Image 1 (cartoon, protein in one colour):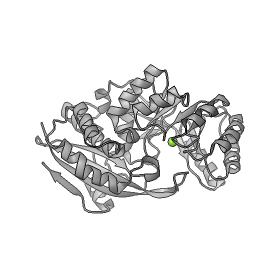
Image 2: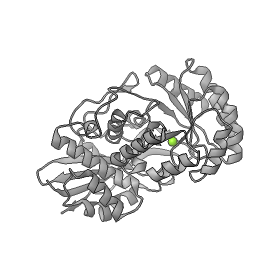
Image 3: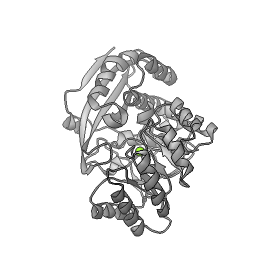
Image 4: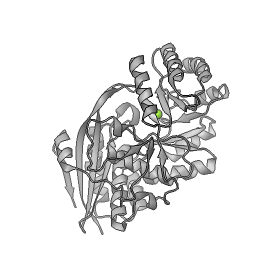
Length: 375
Ligand SMILES: [Mg+2]
C-alpha cells in the first residue's frame, strides 16, 4: 500500500458567535483539510487550522507547506509506517506542527480504515469510554458571557474556562467574580490568560483570583517566560498549566525542569499530530505531570482526532476541551458530527477517525480551488 495522492482544501467555516481572546478576534475558522489516498483506493482525512499569533502558522502557509514540502515527502510511503512518516516530516522541515498534524491525522484515519479499527485502538486502546468535556468562555460583554456559562451548565458540560489576560485585569477579576456567583457550588472553573499578562499584572491578579476556587490557571505569562512562571507558581496554590509554551516534548521537559508547570495542555495541532502527542503523554507520565486533553477549535473532523487521543491516554485529567468548535460552527463538514451528550463524548467505534466528510459542504466553503498532488 502506497500513498499516491494528497488533496488540500482551504475552507473558512463561519462561527455562530465571534471568538475573542488575547490572540485577537475571529468570526470564522480558517481550516486546512488534507485527504490522503492510496493505490488500493483508501483515503484518510485530517483537519488543521491557522492561527498565526498562537501557532506561528496561518491557513495559507500551512497549505503551501503541505503542498511544497510535506506532501512530496510522504508520496510513495506506506501509510502503515506512521512513525517513519512522522520522522520524515521532522527531517524535511523543522516546526510547522499544525501542517504536520493534518497529515498525521489523515494517516491515522486511513490506517484505521485499512485495519477496520478506530484510531484509539491504534493509540493503545480506549481507557476512557466516555470523555467528560468542558466549555470555554471567550471575551464577550459580561451578561452574554454569563448567559453562555449558564447554557454550558444546562447542556451538561462538566467545567467552564474563562478567558482572562485582557488589557484590564480589573475587568477580568470582575468577570470571574460574577461567573463564580452563578455557577453551581464546587463547579470546576478554570482561567486561561493566553500569555496576556505581564509578570507584574499576573502576580497581582492571580492571587486575587484564587479566592474564587480555580481548578487551574493556564498560560499566565508569555510563552518564553518560564522563569517568571516558575516564580509566579511559588506564590500560588492553584496549579499552572502551560499551552503556548509547549510545542515539543523537549519544551515540556524544559518547562518542568524550570519548575514552571504543573499540568501540560496536549493540543495535537500544536504538537504535530497524534503520534507526537501520545509520545508527550508518555513523557508526562514519567515526569509525574498530568495532561489535559485539548485541541484547536475545529469542525467535527479535527475535534474527533483529538477525541481519539483523549480516549486512549490514561493520564488525561480534567474535563477535555477539544470539542468547543463543534458547537460554535454554523455548519459541520461531516455527515455524522461528533455527538456531545450531557457533557460527554463517546466515540462510536467506527474505523479510522470514524467520520464521513461531506464533500458538497467542503466545496461550498472553499476559499480557493483545492490543490491536488499526485505521485
Ligand atoms: Mg490555552
